[in-house]
Image (tube, rainbow, N blue to C red; front, side, top):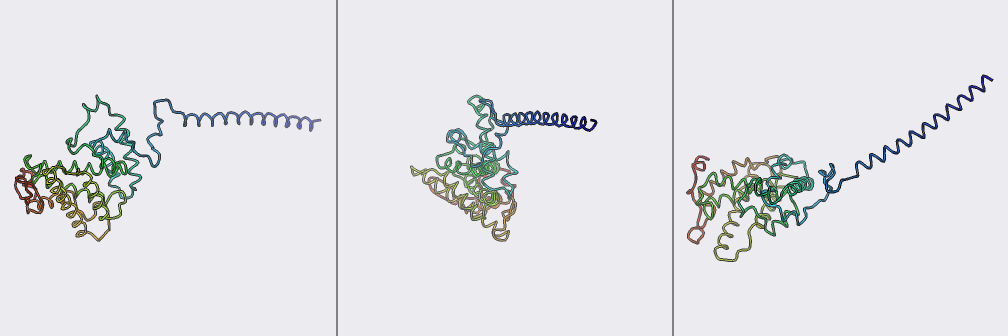
Length: 300
């Protein structure tokens, strides 16, 4: 009898255990459904928190690209500067990070806030993307960010070293174009796993050629040929600095290009010695050492 009672008790405990297991399974199933619901549900008009991690192969839409300008790409570069200097990141990864920043910048822009709060790095002539630049920017937003950042840096240096009267068609203009291309050759070579300095050189040429609109008038043709010539001098200067100062294709951060400052001084020396072109009285003439500010004279 005692034995049978124990059997009955065990049987009852087993039934209670099974019942509790069923209840626990129901609760677990409900919990799983809740978790799935929370992670997948997005309130209309509000992006999910995970939206910062944009999917692979995300591209800029034409609508967004048409409403962005050079200043926006400079801002993206500044926010991701450490990533641009990281030789281990791929161009594809860098493009996705830049796109994420640009989408946020675009989202924050509206006619009221845009006119009052945006910091302008570039004048309108350099800031607006032409059709060729937009096409390249869509292919690689990270290259566009590098391109406009170098444009800003070259403009800033030329304004610091040359007086305003020589910043268009004069010595300052020649310096800006050459230094711009030297910076691009350097930055396109050592960033985001680019193959080597030759790739950097070609990429710099591709972008700066795109910037030059097809000239229509005699004056435009004269300015265009001057710019293309000075662009090449800048690229050649950076390439020579690399090949002189480091083993061929041995890219590290900074590589054999030297500092940006050393490239700027080399370019200025070439301007002083007449290795670049400027326009005087409707003709190409050699550059010289005139038109420098006190800062330009001191930087030797």
